[in-house]
Length: 475
Image 1 (cartoon, rainbow, N blue to C red):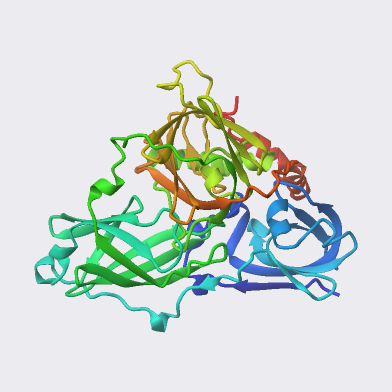
Image 2: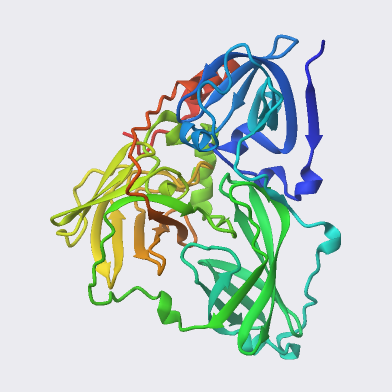
């Protein structure tokens, strides 16, 4: 019997090129998101541990396949455990093909021996709109537009889905005969029509898949209203399913934090669990400068990701990771405990400036202060690391400023801005939203990198990994 090996090419459906695809744990370096496959076989080895659960299956023609799943906490939330799939089980793994003929699959779902389909994500995801549904705004000169002059200025932007940190700052600017916009700290081209405008957002979802969103809006009664369409891409965690947006006139001072308001501390101590990860717009793609692109190429060569080796994921990565977070207040210090990775972080309120002699490390030196009732954490002395599982670099000269505040419903927004002119053209912003979970227990989440090395050992790339692996910032 020949192996069951179904390949489905979906590049046209997804509408994006292989070169743009990046996802979980250096996905672009290992997997081809344009190629779906199904592989059937018997489980001959199980590595049920962090940072990645892996099943090794043997097909009917004696090929050993590496089936890569999510981490243990993520699978636990979906109802999986170490006994869900066992040695000797015959399964079918559906997902994304390994690059260059590698015998590996990045799992979307698994058909268990019972016939049950075990999905890797809580939602089935959404795909881009059909071409027949798409429309564009016919561009006119700014002088012929009825709305161009009225757009100029600052707006408070929100959508019809929960969005952490909303409203966002939307600003329209004129540059000669061209209009641009800044949304979520990203500079965007604007197509101006007679009574409408169009903006395209190049975003990515939780797993790193690229997605292009289209915003078409108009002005009515002094406000902007419009539609949001997913033009291309596929997403699953979370669904990029916002459909409408609204923007109201605002002062740019609302987002100007250069002068702190009088201190009004609030009680943030306790255990928190995430309610919103990226929101229904996904996250912006970071804009690397030439030096950043060059360093990014170096990191990709080694499939570099510190979490694969159970090293610290760093501060910016925490905004995409699940797991409980506990804030513990004491005199002149705040301690942040991360269940995912079992890390401890200190924030000091009695230090006025960063040390010039402190050793750089993954979490850096964090100084705390209050801007009104918003907790501000300013972190420097960072070791070089990566921004996401896609391995975009963060230099040792970077600075991260976090803001924590409570919404009216008692939930907490966590917002981090990365300032790193060494590698980036613009600052990078990440946000999540959390609710109290003081009744839950912070459990130790061990991590064992042997599944990472085992996979490379089986496909013959382990030596190449050690030869190419960059070490800067890890000494």
